[in-house]
Length: 508
Image 1 (cartoon, rainbow, N blue to C red):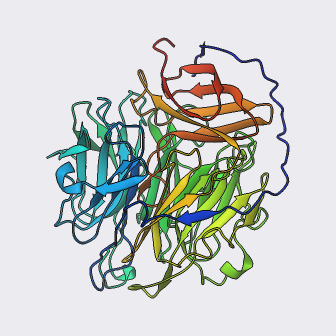
Image 2: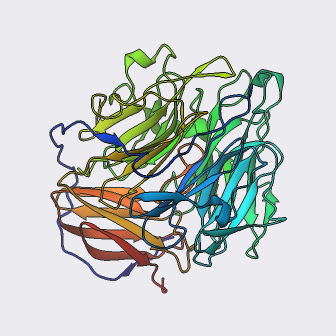
């Protein structure tokens, strides 16, 4: 049960229905990779199945801007330190190059509550936990208890048992080597409980799937809004294997309820986006796919309905399986108060070939989407997009996009700033986990209310900037309500056009 602590209250009228804006301009992005000093080409083994990438935004040197961690299947990983929008690869001195490993996703959080970000790196074989030492220095945690032994694609941090310490869920796909996936049994979803001493213990708290799914992504999110963290997994589609799965958490006891709530998506699931498309305060989910993506909109009953076609997210030309999306995210790129949708495009031909395709970009025009192509990435070079991660890389208040192209040159796409206002909220937990993962934030202005959920490890093998970002259109102030995982509620008045660091109140 959540309790309430009010720090400051701004008297604002909270309207029940948000006004629908007129369709805005096309979303514009500029490829600034070269100008930013990023020279990252993803390397992959010859003949391997064409997936296994990772990207994470994090402020590892605590200087206020977002640095970029990128994984490789062959050769050293990269860690690009951000110095005012110009990046330098410092992986070797940071201690994360790890040259001999076949790596996939990277998920960032402060698992030991020491105020320094740490990272889980998924690998084909034994995965790695890195402890942050500060100043963009990391050390491998030997015998951390999270290694696994499969083709792990991604991990997600979340405090499922409510003890204030982040636990870890990881998902394995089938083998990342040929022959085709049907020739090898799928491996499993894994749960690791934080021992609060820097190590983890494997848990059997999740229901056992028989057979287990072939996973690409897993994300801790409070789907049923009861204050604890549920788990949603995105599984690839193979004959005889389960589709996506939703595990509802009731005080640490999990029940598989995918079909019961409409989250049993049966498709070639790749990545997951978490957001609120229509600003109704309820969580909506998008899942990338071979063909039309899935958009599950949560109803007042708590059930989810498939509405991608109804709301314009996905077009008929994608229905013939000729278009494949991977990493995916909701983000308000033009700061108009409505979350847009961006999906990395990259085709597949057979199991070992990959084709170049354009990205999928949909502008939210008030609870409905219009596809953005001209001037929005469609004119840029097509790619073999996989991991996608979102952050404000140049601190101009507009969110930017990193895309890792499989066996290709990665791209930093900078969104064009508008005159609209914005707000970013970075949390520091006290009773809750230090990263504030699992918190729900609602910003109310004269235009209505918007809701964000703090999570780590969505998209595909990616971590976005962990700060909650709100577009505020022409509003310059509002009321922010924070629902912490501990049950504490804080309410405060906020002004636009800043990144705020908010510490959890000590008393419930």
